[in-house]
Length: 451
Ligand code: PMP
Image 1: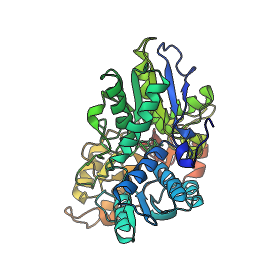
Image 2 (image 1 turned 180 degrees about the horizontal axis):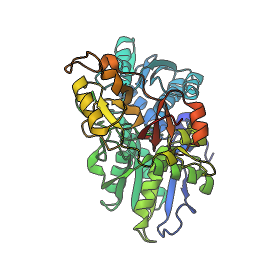
Image 3 (image 1 turned 30 degrees about the horizontal axis):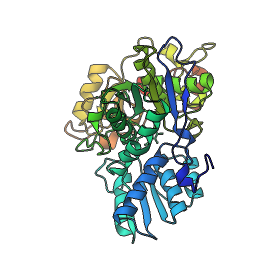
């Protein structure tokens, strides 16, 4: 029986390649998208989940009646929940508190238990998603920590399935393979296979958010989910996952949030392909690469999941406007019109002394400073996610000593609005006498509420 499977686990993989025909205008090399959102759990991570569980069953670390534990905000948890359901295991998934309620509902629908922990913690913190998952696995009888970041069965899933599928589907004609780098399993596993079967001819390109440390960014927050490497400023050492085999990659393309989101939306509207922004970033990288290629080349780009997971983000104009990813309709004045002559915002690390803060106020002439997590190699504009509070110049007055920490003086972070938001609408929404203006999710200016 063709296309019939003995269980849902056998239905993982075998995803089609779909040629892009409109976003590729002006490009002569064919570009095919590997549609991983068609997996049973809706993402490429079904492959890794199935492989990790199979390997753990083989080596005896996961035994009948055991408990699968993982720390993840999304797709790996769903993949593991499916495998757990089908194979008769309990699944416990630890998620950061910003995870959407829809995702939690999906996990629970498959019967997984969900444990919520604060997001944005340094990697060493005991409540960090991975640390907590590891501890729960250790303390639960029969517990097994899947650990996609360092589990060799994660990249191996792509050596064994994704890579061979791409080679067979293109009849060995693939010349370039492009995928986002999250744990690194997808790009380096399939990449290693394709290099091996092609005698090194296939070029492997990773797509990485501009601010991620994989491609050389400072690790500050970005908006494309599930790829890249965020670095909390208090993290002592920037440790990369063992699932990411950097030597397999020929290049890493750094993609800004705005470009990734723009391509994501174009894929829906011009190709009829509703994919997530990690796919948008990968396609953006693939288009860059393909522009320099000819008709004898063949690019395969991997789309990890569906845009349905992000309808309230990348496909929501209000969300885009509020975070500064849209320029507005220009029929009425927008916040960007108020920026002429606005100075770069004053920035004070949360650990600064009042003397250091005073210096920054004197240097910039600002009345209100952004209080940020300390980040030594920060990009010129601060990521909204790095801003933890506000400090007013006038709060430094009085008898405070210059050696003192600013800590007791830190006020809550300013309200923020996007650069393309109409002025009247933004002012109706935000409260307070000062506010931050975001462009591409970064603070472009701090402005007083206009009279
Ligand atoms: N995109 C999405 C939507 C994902 O869920 C993941 C997995 N975290 C990735 C990209 C990256 O894949 P990998 O972990 O294999 O690098």
